[in-house]
Amino acid sequence: MWRYVLRRTLVLIPTVALVSFGIFVLMRTAVGGDPTLYLLGHEATLREAAQARARLGLDRPIIVQYAEWLRRLGALDLGRSFEYPMDVGPALAGRLPATLELTLMATLLALFVAVPAGVFTAVGRHTPLGRAMSAATMAGICVPNFWLGMLLIYVFGVKLGWLANSAYVPLPENWRQNLASMALPAVSLAAYYAASWTRYLNAALLGVLQHDYVRVARAKGLADRTVVLKHALRNAIIPMVTAVGQSVPYMLAGAVIVEAVFSLPGLGRLLSDAIQSRDYPIVQGAVLLVTAAVVASSLAVDMAYGVLDPRIRYD
Amino acid sequence: MAVRRLIPLLATPSGGALAAAVLLLAAAAIRPDLFSPYNPVGIHGTSSLEAPTWGHVLGTDVLGKDVLTQILYGTRTTLSIGAGAVALSLAAGTAIGLAAGYWGGTLLDEGLMRLIDALYIVPDLVLALTIVAILGPERIASVIVALALGHVAAYARLVRSRVLAIREEEYVTAARSLGGSAGRILARHVLPQTHDILVVRSVLALSSVILGEAALSFLGLGVQPPAPSWGRMLRDGFQYLATAPWVALSPGCAIFLCVFICNQVGEVLRDLLDPRAAVSARTERHPNRARAAQTAGTRVSPVRR
Image (cartoon, rainbow over all chains, first blue to last red):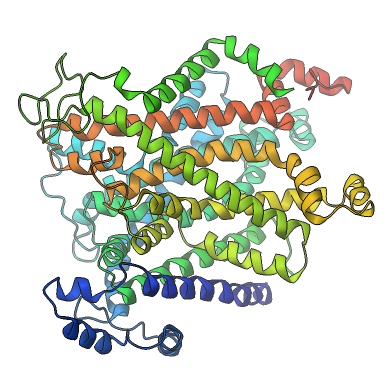
């Protein structure tokens, strides 16, 4: 299996390189892409702007700049931010915990809802509650996460006044307050995935329940509960692992906007701010980190198959 | 035919309601002035942030503009950006998918698929943000391109996998042996076989583009004023959430309804165009009949195409 992982990783390196090169070139050739405009303001003279460009190394050919960036990347140096007096690596590392916590909490929350709800909407699909839950999942996949976040702020913050003290605090500092500040963002990010994964599991389970081995299990007199939870669910969960793995890029994108709504100091906010102020090194580093996370999650899904379904082998 | 099966669907209450909702949405996008007496850029409230009254059903915003009018005029912005982005990604993705599939296994296929992989691994909103910033958010075209890029990969993969199967069919071999050029074979024999998946995919892509446009505008990188935009209304209303919740909450309802309608239409179309999904949906509605038919070795109400 490790040989398989290694091979997949090697295949993905050119893809990630293509992404970083594309963004590198596009940002530097863009119409409004000159960062000195943002750094120095509109009063700067042409001479000052040229000096700033030389200082940032932007006066060299793009290929040379990219080669330099790659060379530094080899030494795990992502460069220095144009806007802030800090290196990109520590800047990203400082913002990573909030985003990681947000996406992890949202994933767990969504799974916590989706697995029982998926089973129930499949088994109890002809009951009124099952129908109501199916309708709720339909609504769940249509709600924009930032609007849901606003609704939550309105209900819990404005109406109920529960959010008086909910500014973000890092987890090691005060875990109670941290969880309190992350709860609503996690709910707004999780809602879509809870609904979408419920539908996914529902469809998978309905498919599996029609198989002969389920009929055999029923025929030997097993309780419905055992048939569904032990025989059907284990097989239905495999395609759902794909759905969860494929959701990672979208979840990271969702984090960008949820962080903006709840003013969380996460990677997404850093990225959207850096894009607007043309802070190339930060954008470059953040996109690299995000794509690496996407690639890692797709690998993790592949490996999870082997654990869940012993029939799947890697050569 | 799909059209013949569409008519009885429209006669059901839910089908009729969906059709009415689609028509209303289209009407609001084409002629918003029919639904609102106010000028979308004019200021007409007696005061700013006026609570909903009969004169202003959804209240007014901070500049004293009628919220409902803004939403109605925003429908056009949202739907035209959505349609533009879907059309662009459909065209680009289909072209890439056709080429990669038809010449599957060659260096061209390999190169195109690496490009598609690269587009795929960047989260769509991150990609859209970067592209909009690069092209400049002042022009609506850059918002359309930015949102379209995120969907090219899905179309290309979908079309490629379908083409890989079709190109082995005998009629394609026949067309090739008769001297048909690649362009002719693709256009006449391959492309028409992909329309069912593309139609369903496009309606679902539309809902995702609508959400993406709202998100971009919410972050301040979408459609710029004075063009009305639901996402920007949310952004502007957010700061008055405590005092005037209607400003931010009503455009959100509009986005929600629009996405909901798109998703429902997508499901109806999938049932109509994808016979396998239609069969499973039918047997699902009559579980006992389906089981009885299964044991008897026949299919319930075979779908005619």
